[in-house]
Image (tube, rainbow, N blue to C red; front, side, top):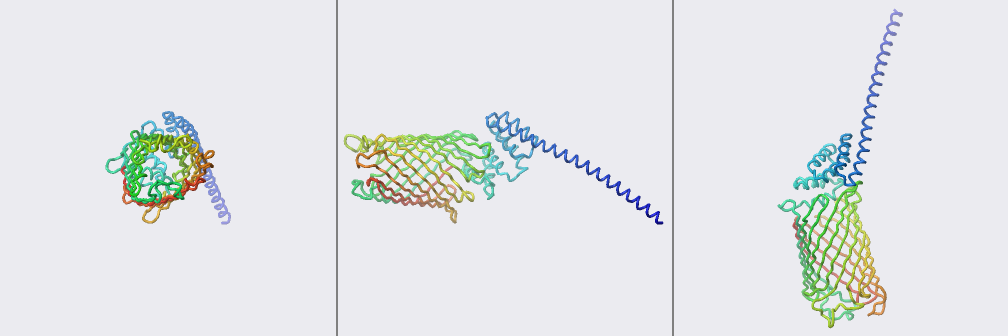
Length: 469
């Protein structure tokens, strides 16, 4: 019996060992196959990245057909790579194949439904195809996601898409009317005896404004527009300082996305404005302006503006008010000038642009013909935006302008240096998407080594603005 039991036990152990060895063989074979498949997939991903890198270089060189072919290869190797899909859509759109770009973007969103980069590009793609309502719905869906990385740009896209009844209109119009009180509209000096003959300094009045723009050329990256602006002030107590300004000009804007994902805008502007005082031409000013925005992060809430501005200012009156020439003077008092201005301003927004700050610095050079008006100017700027209850936007903007004039002023016999501080406080509430009511307070204080140019001024205004876009 003992021998029989011992034999059974040995037989049992031999069978268990056989089963264990068989399991090891199956496990080893599976591991080899799994590793081989993983290595093949990894090789595919590495190949896709290499092809993608080559495609990006072609895209940057604007060789869109070649870039598209490389991107299609990368997409075949790694179909779920959203970076490949993003650039593939960009490349197809650049060739006018918006429908194909839309199809790839939708495939990418099937893999990653919350990918805001693909959503944002799809919204622009739909807009380019004239599918305005679909683009608007998609941009609004990005707005509903507080953590979406593109809430800021989608908000700007919504502004472009909101059009009353006419679809995607290239026309934009803004009308504004204000009742205001100006404590020193004549900029009378603190020592009033130094600036006689200016009339009543304080006055109630009205300001009427109109701005309109027509974008006659638009693509996904380029836009060209013509623009007109006008404003008229009417002061009840002192009509000597009633001003009327007309500005006619145009702009060309280019926008794109850097390979690292940042969006940028570059705009060139040219315009000419004519300012009339009491119906006489006071100032004519042709201006060329180049400015740009670069979004340093993906949500557009961290942006920088670079600015260069060139103006020619010619002061004249028709007919002249002074005897023997223009009242504004000749020689050292001639104010005609070329003005150069360069600046850098940074903006930071929080909570879907409900809160924000900005800060920066500008330098300007007034190269006037008359030495009494020639200066170097230094302008630190800053501002704060806070959204209050009931969606009331409260803003405060500050500017300090230090002007150092060349040489000795020929009339005062000493060097002129001005320090001017401006602070603008505003409350704005949208009554409807097209109608806004605004309450503003402007505080202006100037100190100068020449007493004629030291003054204080405050302006209070209540206004209504209507927009069509």
